[in-house]
Image 1: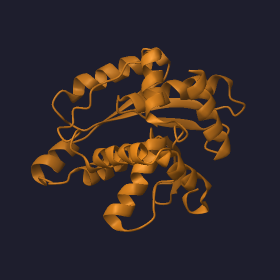
Image 2 (image 1 turned 60 degrees about the vertical axis):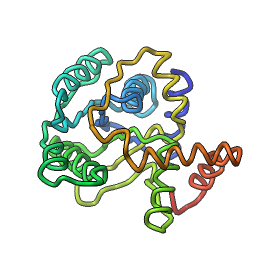
Image 3 (image 1 turned 180 degrees about the vertical axis):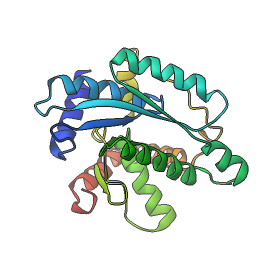
Image 4 (image 1 turned 120 degrees about the vertical axis):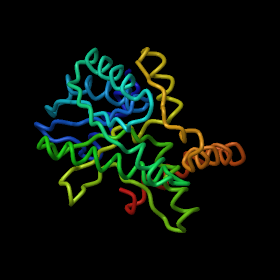
Length: 235
């Protein structure tokens, strides 16, 4: 994992993501992004000059089969040496049954993050790591531009006043294709997304648009990334 560790260490150092003595609560869905992030954070904690520890937190959305997925993630976290926490929720029922949302992703994301941050704060924690990578950075920017008409995206580090949690994104310098390669190369345990809307989200459509732009305008994604990374508005 030399490439992943190198880019993660650079992101952590560039943005001051971790302080001495931090417990970094790593949000793990079971997908390739979060599992690689967890594996790299655990390894980084063993040699980084700033001492910190890593624990994994999984939000069980309540979909069919989600208990089995949580058990599999727990086993994977154990093999990596990361303590595991599971938050049981009724988010799936609320979003898809009670609310019957036509576009459920926004509400689902808001509730999932809310449950995560509340749980971490309840543990006395102050640092949450999310598995957003460089392609997500681009997609969030394009979603905001095309659907809201404004220039916005998430930042590598975000402090949440209401919960006292700092959200860090250690994979911000990683491209999705590299994450897939590294996850496969290291035989990381990866679990299927059991959300029925996973293949229909606006975010996935925007990601495909970004890739198509890259085909028509070579290096378009890299130029968007460069603009985001060098603009004070997005730092």
